[in-house]
Each structure stands twice: as C-alpha cells, then as structure tokens.
Image (cartoon, rainbow, N blue to C red):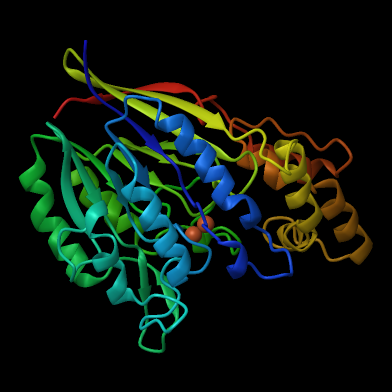
Length: 362
Ligand SMILES: [Fe+2]
Ligand SMILES: [Fe+2]
C-alpha cells in the first residue's frame, strides 16, 4: 500500500478579530474563532501534512481585517493551504471599506490556490495523481441578492477541464452542499439554502467524469453522505459544537483509492475550559426560534402555540447533537409521529467522524 497524501480539513472558521465582533452574541461562537484555529494549527504543525483544505466561511462576514489576519497566519504554515470562499466571505458583490468584494478574493488568496486573479475557481494537482477542483458557490443576482450556485463561466470551465484530469483522483471542494445531509434537505424550507441550487446538475457532471468525492461546509454539521457513486464529506464549523476538524489520508490500495477519515475536536480553550458543554448549551439557548419553525413546517405543521413551545423546548439539543455526527436521537416526550420523523435524522451507518472509504482508482 502506498500513501498518496495526508491532509487536514477545517471548515467554517468564521475568523473574527475582537474589534469586529458585535457586542450582541450571535448563533456562531465567533468569540473562539481565533484561539480555536490556533489550537488546531498547533496540532497540524506537528504532523507531516501535505496540505490543508478550508472549504469556505473563512471569515465572520468578509471583513478586510479578518481576511488579512487569516492570510498572514496561513503564510506562516509549514504546508500549503487551499481555500474556497463561503457565503460569509463574499457579502456584497463590490465590497466597501470594511468588507471585500467578489473581485478581491482571488487576488488576496493567490498564494492559497488562486492562480488566476480574475477567477473565483481553480484546479491544482495537490500531489502527483490527486487533483483538487476548487469551486465558488457564492454568486449575486442583478439586484445584489446572494445566491448559492455556480455561474455559467464556471460550468463551462468545469465541463472542459474535468476530462483533462481523468487520470487523476479528483477532489471537489465547494462551500455549499452537493448531496443532501438532512432528510429532504433539497426541498425543506430550513435546509434548502445550504444546498447548491443546481446540485443535481453538478452531480450529473461529476458522475459523467468519474468524480467520486466532494468536500463541503456551510451546514455546520459533521456528516458524510453517499449517493449514487458520490461521497460527500461535510465538515462542521470550528466555531460551533463540537468544534471539529478532520485529518485524512489517501492510500493507493491495489486497484482502489482508500480514504482514512479521522475527526478531532477542540476540547478546551483559555476562558472556555469546558468548551464542549458551554458550546452545546450556547446553541441550545438560541435554538428555540429554529426548532419552533421546524415543528411548524413540513411534515409536522404544528399550529397550537403551547404544543409548538413544548416541542421546541424538548428539541433544544437537537441541533448540536445532530452537528456532532453519527447521532442516535430519541425524544420520548414528544408525540409518536414527531418522534418517528425525527428518527429519520439518525445515522444509519456511523461514518460521519471516523471511517474508511474506498474509491475506484482512476
Ligand atoms: Fe458557516
Ligand atoms: Fe456558509
């Protein structure tokens, strides 16, 4: 067996320097973004890594200061880093004094994958035989409204480029989800904005070119989805419970590529000594409006206010426990039909955090 590479994935860093953090605490624990990332890097710097992948939402909200902090930190790493933008990195098409615009991202990150300052996507041979395809899923409509899709130029580039990499094992990195990671994610009002709008078109193009692996972020949960020959490793956020990051090894194993997936979590930081418990509670304390909307929406359609409040209260840990991956959740206090539906969120195979996957060799 021959090891092709060892690399790490850290997603949704949401880097926020103290002066950029709003005094009103938000849903993401951006207060720990920098110390958590520093702790991860201190671990990664001890490993013999070939590269680090960051699948978007690098910054809190696209601030120049936060992008500059990250660029400066990535420059100091002993291994190369490859990035793509997330919806939090490109807030306005044009940017302003405080936040970067679409045109600023590729020039800023030219040392981190972007070989063409005019393009928000690129291809790069990471190690011999392993090809990264880095896509941008944040676009704007003519009114300046943010969309999660690919633009036509990117589709054309991708369709023309993929056949050229047919003799390599291809890894596609993109912020928005290409496969569903929650039941009915593509159609559910709460889940669909985390999926790429034209995910079906991308899946078809990838399959037609023998691509088997995608790496995404955005949903802030640990999950691995497998559908019709495609495997998607979704990595949770470093600013949310359970503060995960992944270390991956690719091995050439006879006629197959073997992928060994391991997950690590930040467990303690100065001032946040019991980080997992604090951070699980942080989400639970803010989950009431989301859980209310969940039980008011399909397929529950609860209408009675007291019933909604009771269900939302019972579900306060639903999201953080789901975010940890490999979940087996039970809510015995809820009506049977709600329990039955929530069970569809449970993991059928425990592959979200530690697993071995095998792919066809190109
Ligand atoms: Fe995010
Ligand atoms: Fe995102």
